[in-house]
Amino acid sequence: MALEQSLKEILGMKSGAPKDFEAWQSLAKPPEIYDPPQRARFCLTRFVYCAGKSSLCCLIPPARLCLAPCCQNRFADITQSDVWLEQMLQVPSHQNTPHALKGAWWLQENIAGEGILTFHDAEWVSEATGMKSSKVNWTIDAWNLWGVILTCNGYWTGGGHLLEMSPDGKWIHITFGPGKAAHWIYVIQPGDVFKTPEGEVLDVTPGEDMMRISQDSLDTSSKITFQYLVRRVAYLDDSGKLVKTPNYDKLMKVAKKGSQFCCFDCGDAKLDAIQRTQNYRVATPPAQVTMSESV
Image (cartoon, rainbow, N blue to C red; front, side, top):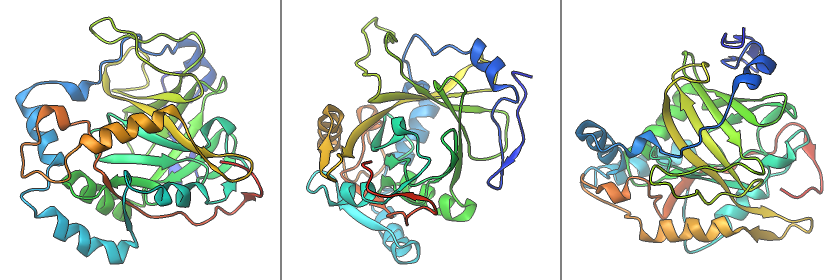
């Protein structure tokens, strides 16, 4: 049962989480090596990723501008102003939002054109289960193919991401469609050590960093197919003031060196970059709001 999907319907979506979550977590271990498969240097992989990161010789910007009115999306140069960040963080927090997930999180090394998101605007039916929409409070690259695909996909499919936390609080299962693949966020714990293939220790901080992992199935030994870091870059303190973490500086460094436009070959070094211009839509307050609480 530990490797069987629950398939229980939660908030209108069939859960892909383990049927016996406690049994599954007793088997689960985070990977010791941080080696995102999307870094692979196979020719086909580079071709697909470069295509996704490209503006297709300036065909993408007009498409994005056509989508903006109907999708009520906004644009922000994240290196020039914090307005976009404050707008997302000022959305009132759902009363069941897990404290550990508050703030704004950068999806570092996610090659799919996704940038920064929040969790506090999700519809949390409990502190362990919530539905997050990718349509709101979830930035995406404005001027590349990945970004346009994500915008269209979000509105065609609804953009729902069912989040289910393991009983020990170390794992968050993500369901966003049918299939046997397992998608996780691992909440990095004190004492965890991750190394690169070259043997360097990964610079992560418990409470400020998490790790996104996709595998072929719920089998804890199955192949990792996707991997990146989820880093908290900012939050609001008790007075509502914006507080930036050290991860914010890392985000700005990557954003400032990234390309806004490229015809097709964006180069291997830029596959993990985030565009300075992000497209986003601010969430409406969730149904059950915690008043006067920092996020």
